[in-house]
Length: 516
Image (cartoon, rainbow, N blue to C red; front, side):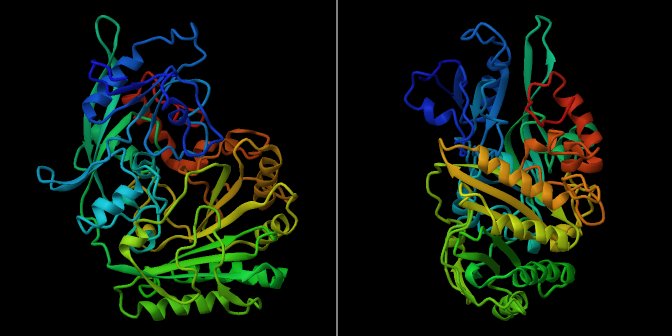
């Protein structure tokens, strides 16, 4: 139905759209909210939030559903947006405009824009590049606030390195009559005091913490290249023994450790996709800006260095891995037009999933490699679709000081994402057991390592945009380092102060939200 309250579309339980809108991309998580709001303008967003914070859950007559959550693309890996305790979901995906703002002399991006919108409007129309993710349905509202990392980040940095201003609906005061009031504020990097801190918190402090973002502005974005040279290769598991496996992982980490400040390879991005032995291949995706001098030669040199001494034959990539479909399927460099790179196909998702992450300041130590090898070569029968993904890191990312933005990890060489998937409605237990035990084996052992990537000389915590509720569970986090320090390190006290200033009523909260 359409309300006459200026708060957008109100979707209730008897609307045919409700079953789809009450869940996110990951079917593991669903909510049973009183309603979902679809807002198309910042003004509708403000009004929707104002109504939601001042009403009770009359549908249940109690406090079972107490949270108000905001959804952009719906890709949250945990139940932070969709869960049984959610009373209202405000969906901002209709706010997906992207345009040149002459007043601010910056590119304006609506908080509901997806990576696909970025490719279609920012890249193809304005000719600019957002160095963020490639999954087309991910929404920028969560992606940017988590730091914004993607295949052009080693060349150009993180998306937040270009964030000039952010517009946020906040709840920070009561009227004399006792009603909570919503303000729409704009905070920029040019501001000082509390506004500057609000801007800073949105440069990696994570979504769903301080307010409801409605718009972002970016300055000095790089020009989009005409395309990239891309390699998609693989090594057959049938030809892989432990020595070959270790050599491959060592080559990958060593290359990006040794070429952190190397202009020749700085723009090059690589993804190593370690799959269970039940898969046909271990995969590789690598690309480089095609407009750079000797781009083909640089990419070929990287693949040659990665394959050196592995033993198993390098072949064309024949299968999708995790969230990466086959685009070229060629072990030789292929030119891919920028329009193809920004429109990678992704089918409707019917797979549930669990994810974990780690930043690495060094290549993987031997006990990490051994633990991954043992988990991938002896998976339980239920674990068929899984990936330990190693992404290249550093380059332009590490040229920024950690204090410049809320992203605390600015000296890693690779970043890992652990993934396991199962059919929607299937039993999650064996898959969760496998990924949890793998993670604990990698970062914990008899020598006293605690089972999580505690920041030290080797590891550097976890990525907030790959949230993992297990970090809050003492069964799986045996360290004395809380989840907050694993994500935010020394920035967490500062983020708590921003929370206290801008969300004093703790309206925006979930299992791992910044604590007031």
